[in-house]
Amino acid sequence: MNIPKDLDPADIQAVIDRLDHLIHQLGQPLLGARFNVELLIKTPDCPSSGVAKTKIDHINQSISEATSISALISQEFSELKEILNIS
Image (cartoon, rainbow, N blue to C red; front, side, top):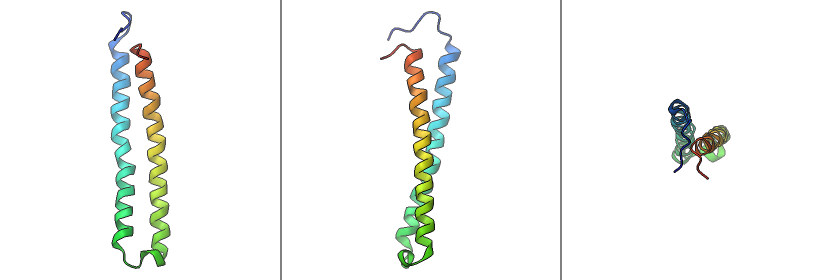
């Protein structure tokens, strides 16, 4: 790895901190999706009730949130690679 000499370690640490925060955030919607899938499985009359639609809506929302956070992680990771001069 060829790190530029004029690189401020605080810049690297800031990106790493943002990545760490986003990775922790990513777990929240995934846990929400998992919880709602488990509820769908455990509720015997769920497919015939309005509960199914609500749970599926929550799962879709959780997946959407996770996708958005994943895109931010990708951007931050690209920035870190750029800062570190890694292809």
